[in-house]
Image 1 (cartoon, rainbow, N blue to C red):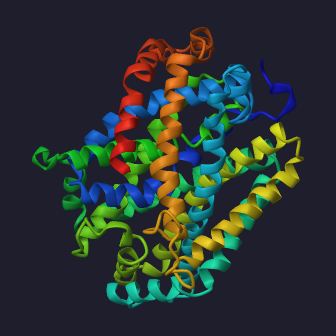
Image 2: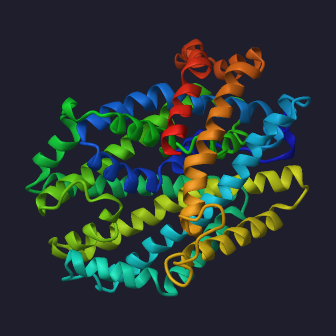
Image 3: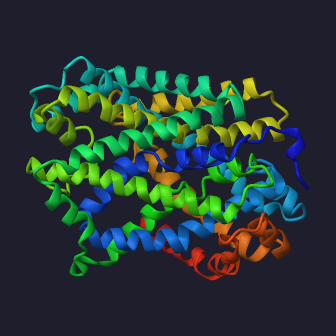
Length: 450
């Protein structure tokens, strides 16, 4: 059943952890978590988020790991190998490849924004501006041609990594980028904890006010737990196909989830003390990163140093995530379509580049363009909404059902218990959650988002 001899595997345990953590730790943690926590009340949201990470994130991540490593195949090929007479399940692979390209496209636009602000902060262009001025600056920037240029530049950087292969490209880059990202986060957290508003910011993040819990808070926390781990996309399934057989899956999933949560917490520790110190609301929302924080950096002592460092950190987070998104399509093209890796990399990046440019144009020349049948969305909005609110939950739900009900129980238990570790004793709990809990929870996310 295994396809292991036909492809490269990660060479080291560090490579496994660095790649999987790098895939999960992206803008979803550093950008999305703080504003989700801010909008939904801080501490109470955090507790519910961690609860859902444990009962939803760990089981579905283990399912993707087990499916990927058992076949050492891509997101389409693995279902063909495991259930050759049930072609329906290959729809999960189609969802994975499609959503991977869609997310890579619009995600690269946002990543391009981080490059623009990184260069601007190096040049000192953010010094002395107010929040209103940054709002105007961001609006002027997004309607010009520079977002298109930066989108192309970011995707070319991505290409330079993935074209080198699994070990020399993906693994080697992850071994450098993921630790660098963690170090930068720690440095920022130390700086934030020394600010006057640190106590108030930490109180907001860690002291729960249970009176603020509403259905919207619960749904938001459940959705953040799901999306921050890239579940349902096929990233983790594809990476698991590169795992050596000696990789302990449950322990790897637990470590990945633990570091993902730690990163989200550090993002909160980074941002909320700064926000409270300078008198901003923690409910600033998505504008926090590109309008509020630059305004704070412009007032902060040593802002000339902290601003470029912050946007460099966002760039690294974006790159580690998009590498894994690119790998979904590359693995499918090389294994299912017989394409060389170099040609597959060119094709994936070229498609993402065309779609990414279309997404970037949604803020300028195509701002008034609404897609047929989905008239409320421009191209960027359509890519974001369709992949995040439809394809990912659908893919995650199908993976959970497949692992819990369709996949041979012997295969699932073998993968989760080999090699045997202390955490592999959780396998019966994981199987139970995959069968009876995870599909229902993901269905709730799906319905709520639709």
